[in-house]
Image (tube, rainbow, N blue to C red; front, top):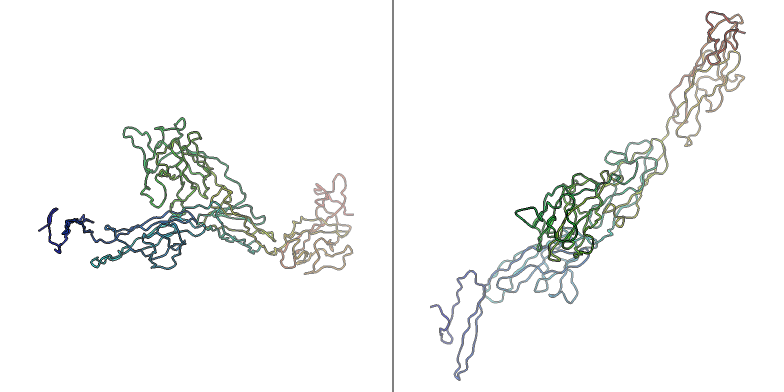
Length: 595
């Protein structure tokens, strides 16, 4: 029979406890006994359900380089003791043992997997590596088993869980890494790829900002030459044009009061204080389900009427605390992954201060028209209202900003040797000079390549039949004053109606392959003569010769130089001698005696 309260049993009787209630976790049986002398004594039996332990996944939020203390989320319904074991280590940061209250003793690093957690409450301590941060910075796994207290306790198998470690960025002067580089090219070569190694120990995206351009060659980015370094100048100030998504809004089913659409366009609030013409968010506790590993309670995704290169954000919060903690934008280079442009902390409401917050956001190497603003209302446990959002930037891109994969091209000059190069800096937030690296340099050594010389055009020249004529042939070499510095003319085809020599006397006569230095006079003496009985009008004869210009390594093409003999130096009236043409003008059929 089932015993009821008030029933009696003989001393030494065997009692059986049977539990048929699935919800039962613990209970007790009180009993009294009376001694011979009449003293009443009391005893009790305690009953508990022997149940397996539980484990859960946990997200731990930490700050870069700052330790965080936490307990593994383990328990048993019957409140029995448990034993925890770290079964795998985080790939980044350091995990340590601590005492149960985190109050005394030295943290002992856990350096190997399958290490038992020393304190009974399964408390641990974690710190990220110096400068380390990230949304999914690291994780580790653990297991938990029940500690038997009685021989009849069932041996339940261990259960497991995972701890995710999310480390917030705290370092505002992140270390940016690169190295100065020297490369050697030749004049006139085709474009050469330049891979800049831009990294950030904090893991944030780095932007390369050019501080100077090469003086000889040309830099190209994505196939376009970079010829000038200027900031964007076409200013843009844009209010929100559309709301794409939001986490919560104070709902009025009969109007749009306090709805997220209130942030569209210029604000319509007179000043600080509650106003239905603003968006009111209301998630005071817990984090939005869209992204549970980020510490914020509300968000709104807005779009602007045009894409701009961002520089600043104006936020009008007309009621509640200044709760904005993060501003992000989709990165088209990473398949739309959210890229952080600004992070901050919550501050208390200040009605006396301006409701406008001017926030410098990081620039991007691509234009944007979508922003995601994230707010945290859990700190002050009160609502917050936003009346307007303005994006400030430029329609045109600031020149000289290079994002991943940091690939440039350098095209050496066709002519120009010696040293060349450019200067650049790195930043994880374009426009914020406090987060800019020191200068780095990419230097080039351009080796000289010899170019063939070229001749200066030579017009047909008139020569006298009766005397030698000095000729000066002109040529140039783009390599001067580089070696070689001497240009030489080489005679390839001699004239047929005269001779060439290096002196007025006509000796020696130059033949095929003879040469002379550029700048020296060359003398032509006609060998064709006429009798005094010759009467005529017009050029007396024509002649030519061919030469080649040589710089010691390369030659130009062979050129022909034409000569024309003059028949007279005076004309009988009424005709006039034309020295340019070497003839008597308008001779017609009249004969002129050649003196």
